[in-house]
Image 1 (cartoon, one colour):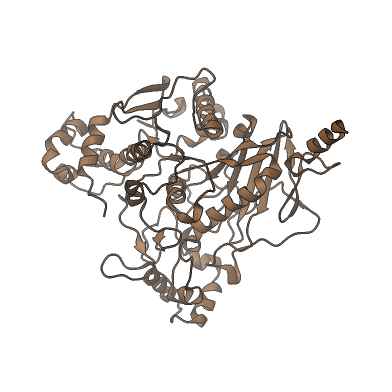
Image 2 (cartoon, rainbow, N blue to C red; image 1 turned 90 degrees about the horizontal axis):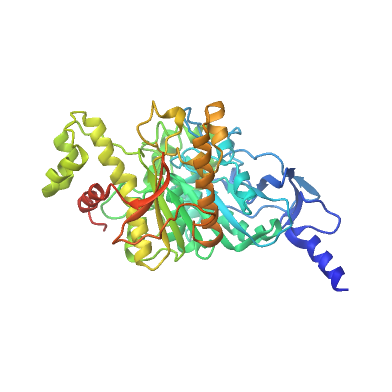
Length: 519
């Protein structure tokens, strides 16, 4: 009898019934059939919410309808509606559409239960991005014994939009930050369904890059996401308020124009006046292309697009304010940025580059421009990069460590061999194919053995962290947990992973001293 129970339990693991195959799983909305790929099983295009179209445009994600029979899950669903960016480092693999709230799962073909789970949140400035790019393939994580999940969230004006008519329709909220609501809904889906794929809903790591990294911070500091994950990784996601203050959803005294006012300006541009139900109906009837209205990474600074906002339900304070107050989720944490990361500088003279350093201007000139370069754009970008990405990563790791959380800092300095004549350092987002170990998809026949070796190491560190909260193991160079006095990070360099005191400490200390105090 005990042997029979054992066999039954084996068949039941991962939501599989007796007689079903490895690629069939039963979840809350119905049964899905994925595809077996070697030692992995892959499920794509599973709806985690109702289509956000028609009356569901600019509403929180709604429950998905139950489907009868066996739903095919072998192709990506559409990425969310956007104007693709031609120079995107992760080009979309599907045609964007407004019906886009899909989740994808990679898992080992074994029926092992309670595997650690990794959930990826893509970047793209909140106006571009999706889960379909080849460099986001989760196969290598699954091959290391993880259940890997990716999903889509609304971007651009579909993801961030406020209007007085929406507030009247749903005065209790949540409102405005529909992209973050989608992310929370996807994590709730994981908590409810991932055990059917062999995953452990109590061992979930969220990770993201750029806007995805910002999203990880938002989820760590949002009361609406409490308890949905146990570890977090931020790649080039900032951590301070240096892109400027967020808008309030509704107008307050002083400050920026409200997100509602931005929504009214968009409606007016689209020929829609008023703040009543008729105006809202007309907005929801606009063709998706009219809502995009040319918005993408090349044209983000639009007076008719608000971006993330303080809505009082999902986003209740800035990331910097939350970290300074210790309001973040108490989870194991890892963060870092790239050696030639993103930074925006528009100043025209060296004096203006160094003016923010005040009394420390001479020291800043010495560490940022020791060769007395006259190229203002290069030095300005270097200073802006530290302010936007490098120092905020250190700040976030320090805050987590000070709160007693296990925290690790990295810098990604590696440049693929084929790009060393073009790149002086690792640009923004260039670490992603190394994290996913999809460098072959990124570099093709130009992939060098050293590129692959570093990719294997990075993927192993990330995978180990997802399993235990500690990235070390398997003979890799030791990555010590962050301690402010030592200020040691792991540098993914052209010599391989190297743990060492931050060589840019003097720069970052000056940058930290010049940052306005958060209000």
